[in-house]
Figure 1: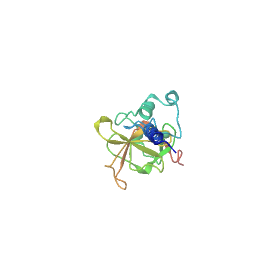
Figure 2: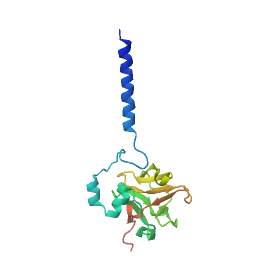
Figure 3: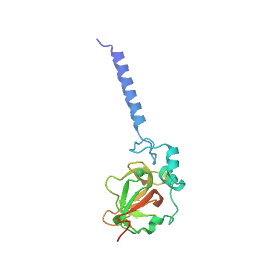
Figure 4: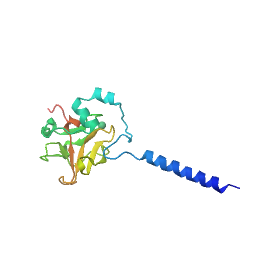
Length: 170
Ligand SMILES: [Zn+2]
C-alpha cells in the first residue's frame, strides 16, 4: 500500500518541478530574444568582429539608424535585400515602396525570412522584426502600409545588404 502522505508529497514536488521548468522555458519579453534559438548563433565578440559598428548596434543591440541615412532608400534596381548579419534573402525589390518615413519600407517579406516579437519599449506596443536565421534585429512592422498586405515593414537599411538581380545588364 502506498502511504498517502508520501504520494501527495511526490505529486506536489512533481508539480513544483513542472512549474519551475515552465518558468525557465518562458522566453523573456520586450524584444529580448536571448532565450530564442536561431540557426546561426555567434558570440558577441564574433558579431563585433564581423559587423561594422553601425550594423552591430542595429542587428545585435536593437538600435535604429538615423532617418534618411540609409543609401538603400535610393536603391531602385531589381534585386533582393538580404540580412547584413547572415545574408539570408529577406525582401524582394518588387515589394519596396516609398513610405516617406526615411527608412527603407516594404509591404511583404519573402517566405520564411523574418520572425517577430512584441516590443514594449518606448511605452508603446510595437511588433519587432528580426531575421529568422540569425535573430538580427531589422526594424518594426506597422499596419498602415499599402495594398496588397496593408503592412509597412519599416527596416533599418544598415541591417540589410542589396544584391542586384542582374549586376551587369548588357
Ligand atoms: Zn540574418
